[in-house]
Length: 343
Image 1 (cartoon, rainbow, N blue to C red):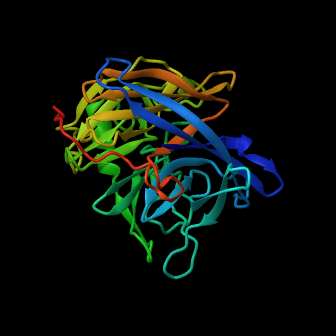
Image 2 (image 1 turned 90 degrees about the horizontal axis):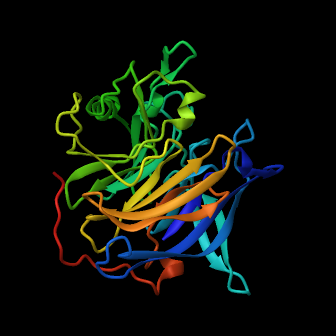
């Protein structure tokens, strides 16, 4: 597997140079053994440098990672840029990452804008998933408000759909009602609370959406209090999400920590979307950052106890890379037996 980091302001390391980190690891299934059913070994890390930032000197704040249409893509939550990561090895056998903008069929760099796409402001990209051969791109699912709680815009409550190449065209999908349906189920409706998403996945096996929001509040947004609003809640829902939250199934997972929330999760290959690899990040009030990984099943049973992946790294995007180019000799397992359901 591979993990990509969003280091926020720390990404700016030199004039016109922004840096992230791509880490590699291997998840091993040890057989049914409770919290020791899986083990994770992080094997290496490579710097990811780009010269593309915004006018506020922010860039390389990568929050999602996906193998799509034969490319390893990552997504910046500041600029809305989609970058391709090309992997190679130097003479010492160390992985080298080259960053190149994803280019559409017209030769233009692909960049994602918020809302219906007409205002040109970049989308704060937070999560991606594949559905029907296309890539769904999502944001926080929360409206932006002013200091008095008034809604300024709802541009981050839209989703985008990226077609495969060579076109790589982008469609803008109105999903405000869907996000509000998730909030209604969790009793934090618009105007009286909020939910912030950094992860979302479509399950082809279960024909359902799964979300593990990073934060949840039943009070209006407050920038200071928000730091301690992380939550350990997972939601599953049919497609489309009902506006009133009907049909949304919820459960807790792992342990609760007000400073630690889900930044991504993935279905473990070969488990028919029954086992989930969970990536959570923690930011203390003193700005100490730690990333954690675990594995659970759909009932919340812990199959790998939560363990530290890295310190001083805020890994926010994850994907499976077994069988992908640079890792061609390490195939992902085929889907095997076993059955589970969401209910």
